[in-house]
Image (tube, rainbow, N blue to C red; front, top):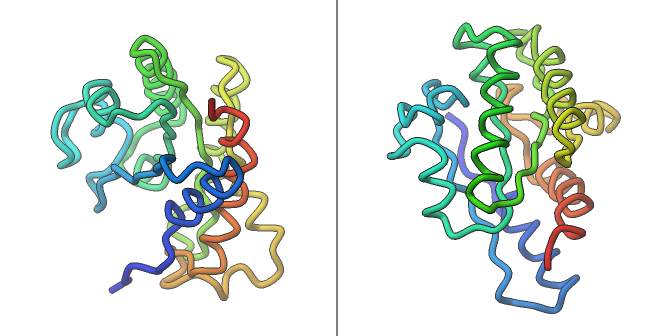
Length: 180
């Protein structure tokens, strides 16, 4: 059973943003739900265990910038790449309609062999990002470029502190220019 790694990816990003902007009021929170029911489709419908569906949760969060990173469970849940693209498009439109700045974040790679379609979902996210002019945090190929990245994964699914720090740096490069 995986355990929480500290510092978390969110803590790393928050610390980096606070340092860069010399502003301890900047907060980064993770409102994601876990488990196999956590998919973008279920999040949109409020069926992932996190309460109301989107965009109500985005609005209630008080965030100005919202990041969408669903991908692994979407493929496992039987969603086609086209359906996933449609949900991503709707999520972006909902975020913008709520006055929020949407950002898409690719999943990191996994090495468990149970996600052969993951690259197709990454491509779909990048297509939606290009089509809708939404920033995308590129994690998939970045992490694959780290020599021995698989050794930094628990159960081939969960990144350790080294990869979480690397992910936070990728996030910082995209999020910092959006902070006002």
